[in-house]
Image 1: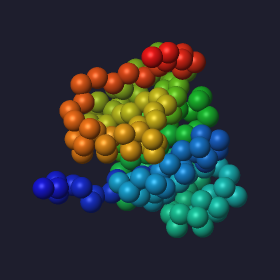
Image 2 (image 1 turned 180 degrees about the vertical axis):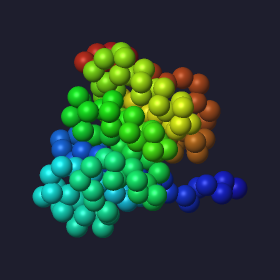
Image 3 (image 1 turned 180 degrees about the horizontal axis):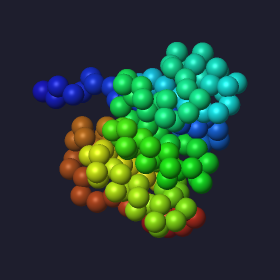
Image 4 (image 1 turned 90 degrees about the vertical axis):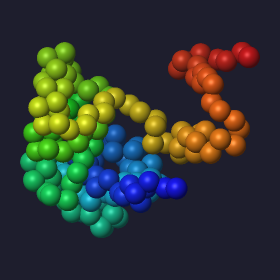
Length: 165
């Protein structure tokens, strides 16, 4: 029996529509559990392109994006030097946060992000993750189905390492 939350979509806003966003947005489009509802950027041209493509709201600041009650989580895809400030703004607004790598440019900034998430009881996911990529989602679906039996171990070679087995 499916859980009641199976059909629920996470209403996601993204801040920063540059290189990082251009790499993650195609994957986000394929994830049925995500609904892109808003974006924020300082470039009005990319905001207009985003609005037309996704039919989502657009804002010229993270503060305005975070004031949107429809946004439940914020994907921080701005330049690295803004990751901490933008993650803290989102957490303080009660939004869950996914922040691309690096999480921050200093240990102190990283600690302030964690403090903001803890204080506001928001979820925080940091760093580059492939967990939403089609290859990982397909693997997850196969594992959960049990069609190959129970998962006992999983091994992934480190970047650049070749598996000789």
